[in-house]
Amino acid sequence: MVELSKKILTNVSFDPKLFQKELSKALRWINDKHDLKHLKEWCMREFGHVHPLILQKAFV
Image (cartoon, rainbow, N blue to C red; front, side, top):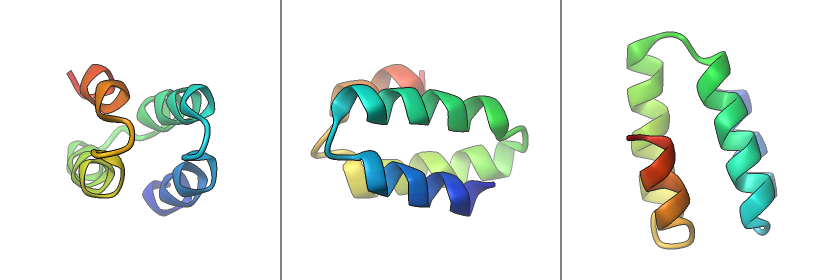
């Protein structure tokens, strides 16, 4: 599920609203704490400079 979420987030990263929507979906789908941590680290690395406020709100 994490790899699918990464692919989707990469594809929608051009649109902040769509990115936020898909990130919210991914966070609801992923139940494992290790996978959530992995997704958070990946998102911060890949999109921290593009969508910092969206990521900060999502991972609070």
